Amino acid sequence: MTRRRHFTLGEIFAVPLLLAIVTIVGLVAALLGDGWLDTLSWAGLAIPALVIPWALIRRRA
Image 1 (cartoon, rainbow, N blue to C red):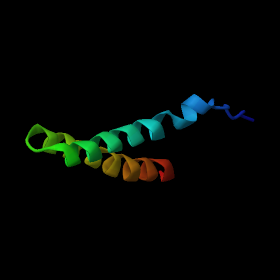
Image 2: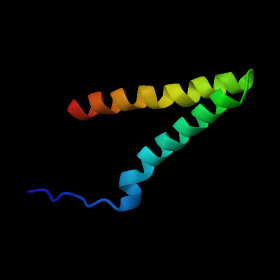
Image 3: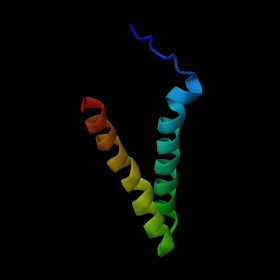
């Protein structure tokens, strides 16, 4: 019989907090300007959009 490991609040919310920060940076970059900020906004909004489906697929496998 295996025992389940208990996670701390920091371990549970670290990745969702990181994704929220990346999303906010992407949204602010999209509002502020052009040029390299466009690239930053695309990356900041694409990363969470790619990570969430990847995590769901990985969890079901």
